[in-house]
Amino acid sequence: MKIAGFTIIKNAVLNDYPIVEAIESILPVVDEMYVLIGDCTDGTIELIESIQSPKIKIHHSEWDPQLRSGGSVLAVETNKALQLIPAEFDWAFYIQGDEVVHEQYHAAIRAACEAYKDDQRVEGLLFKYLHFYGTYDYVGDSRTWYRNEVRVIRNDKSIQAYKDAQGFRKQGNKIKVKPIDAYVYHYGWVKSPVQMMKKQKEFSKLWHPDEALQSMMEQPDFFDYSQFDSLVPFSGTHPCVMKERVARANWKVSFDPTRKKFSLKDKLLYQFEKATGIRLFEFKNFRILG
Image 1 (spheres, helix red, strand yellow):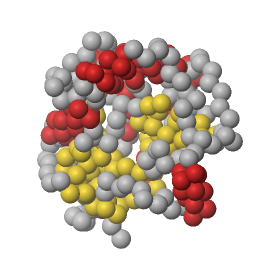
Image 2: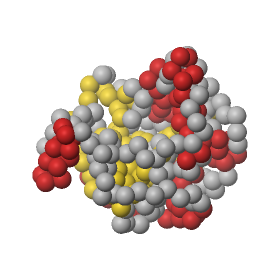
Image 3: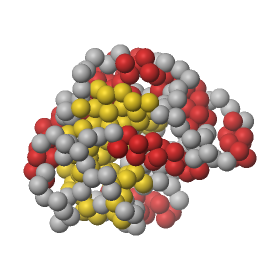
Image 4: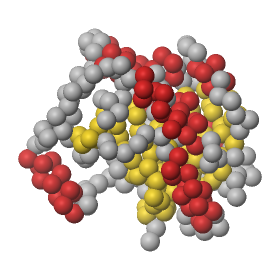
């Protein structure tokens, strides 16, 4: 069995993406790692080249500035990266630039890939998610955050990134997946308030037409982290590859996780989910196999 990792990245230094940690977090699982670097204006190329691993295969691409509606350029580039993976690989392990996999899940991931390698019904593996917010000490636990997404797919080129590359589809249809006992730690919302707004403005260039983009660019250069509905303290450990980044955090953001900011409808849905574990009306970009 062979597993290839793949990712895309552009301007990781400018936007302070933990892309090195993301790549290093799955290197022990994959046999090769394909990194597609966009046309950067910072030191991203040198940053990726600094990772000392013979598994890494670096390729380059130019992002189409016309494909900025709804983040579609992200899917286009993700599909380019997926096409780089040779046919000899059974699975493709996708990691985004702000996602990290804890080392405690490596064995479970490889075991699942081995277990389902010859079961052609299984087109992907479904991961659970922790979404950190503001600091490394809190995670979102409301419907604002998706609970699951596919990160390992069969190396089948008819499977393609969907919309903004959050997930995948096969010829337009939801892919069939098996859940595994492994989490992805999403750190995209953990930055200083100044760096967070800087990243928001840069990322908006991939999503919005000129009118909306201009409105975003006129916002203050300081992100308001009080815009959350529900947070809970994080009581676990961060992946080893995140140790230095967590230690470098030098901003203070205060939260009161006992305060919930819900409409009546969302409050009832939240309470029902906490009592039953069921998220009513949840969008799922996949089909879970029995």
